[in-house]
Length: 429
Image 1 (cartoon, helix red, strand yellow):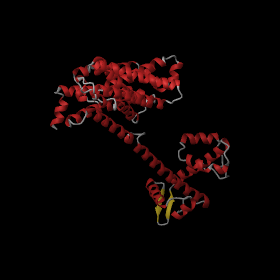
Image 2 (spheres, helix red, strand yellow):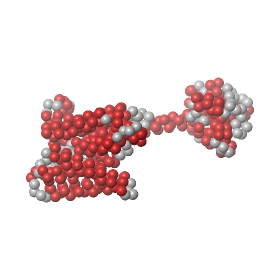
Image 3 (tube, helix red, strand yellow):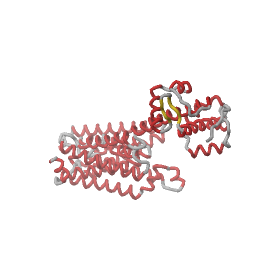
């Protein structure tokens, strides 16, 4: 608790540098990453992140210092060249973009490792710490680094804010942008430049190997929570900021742990949690909806079986046993018993010593499902020209998801027919 209070009091200037630097890089990378993600160019970030290493090394070789301004310029040049390299491979060869990205990543990163190794064996005393750009070391951020990287991050945020509408159109409908005269190629150049700069700002804190995660993972996590771009950008920035602060704190209480990998682990945890628990798109929510839909189909099929038995002996409110229902339709007995109990609790069935019997509400619901089934069979035969003996399975599926609005339009379209393709009566209420 003492460490927690000391850390979040921000009395220590080193803590302030690390926290502010981590949060700024995480937010700027997350916001730019939203547009890269929506443009379906997620792998581009990985290629750029690995391609900035030779630029960092060459900047050091030329200048002999680790001044962040020179390193950013070098990283930006090779990062931007890697994107041009990918575009040229795709444009002038038969290779696909993913192959070009993999090739570019390997070539540039290999070149970077080669130059870095040469620098380490050169005997230059200033080269100490240059290898930290591989995995990052946020704790090494000092005031000058924060000013340089922070300035670049703020410029990124300002450019995205000014061009938000244009970048949105570029991400969602590039062809429409061309049709209305929008400078699409210029905007792509801007987005490419923003992507490279977003990667460059994080290489000291997170490292070239992990920086791609900071670009794409917050956007991927936010996409699970919303379909609205402004909300997605806000959530991605929030997730990035939380991961930046959390990674810095974990690294503070466990000094042996580097900050960059912890930032990536935290944002990855947020992303994985989003994949499972996000409403509407989360895995657990989809499984819940699937189970709910399966139960609905079972219950409606049970009521339909009751109605079919009523049609056969003209006793819709007659008592039925499990054997009667199984003779009408193939049910798994365990699931059938569960469905019967649920229908009793819902008021669609009543149960006594003689078995189960439909309530009026249950009879109406079973009747509606049968009506929808026969209407849909008729629609398939009349409008899609499917043979009557091939329409049953399709109708079995669609009858459970037809809404009252579609039901009304279907009845009107078919002119309220009285019988289905098998000459069975369509039961209107």
